[in-house]
Image (cartoon, rainbow, N blue to C red; front, side):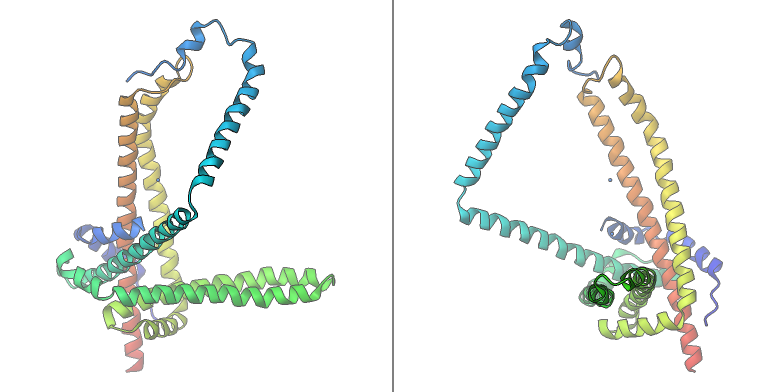
Length: 332
């Protein structure tokens, strides 16, 4: 079993992440793909001497009448739209979804390939840029997408097999008292088996991606080799995953809280006057200012996630190097 110096590995990853800002672009792509004076709304009621007594009684009737008219108009409009137009609309919507899914897969595959290659350059003391790493990412898009589809298919297959394995006996038992026992066993052992299988699949995918990018493996060869490496170094890989998750959750949550405090204070100072003397809609200057604060929060949050992504991938790259080195020495 490989002995990993996790503290040294984390320190090196932190240094690489801070020093090579071009890699943040890939991290950002991966992070994205995985957030004046008011108007006259309140013044009219205060100066009118109260709401007329007739309004509460008439409001439900008038509301129902307006809604009914709107519903009838909507139904009439639907009925007048030709069937061909509906078919074209649905096909266009489906195509749009398919287009964005494909674009997302391509961008993620490109970013993964470029980032993994760029981290190797950085680890070797070079200065990775988009120009030096992007060709690698482009060259590996096809195989990385195939690997992604392969892992997705295996995951769904696993869910199907486990579902059939535990569901069929449940149905066969009918009203038998053993049904309760089987349900408890299915939840305990089936849930445990499913979680372990997902962990093993995640490990396999991490190894397989690097085997494709750094060793030129085909998707199926990379997956088989990745599965072998995952089983052979299960505990060290699990520990690396736990460390990455712990750092990601703690830094990500802390960063979000800090951003909310820093940006939330000016937001509260601007929004609180809106509620003075009864709620009234804020003016455009207030809305624009809040929108800017939201965009700043969103972008800074994505930047934190991008940095964590680069750091995470660097950890796995360095870890992968140690595992391969250990395997090579054992075979020798």
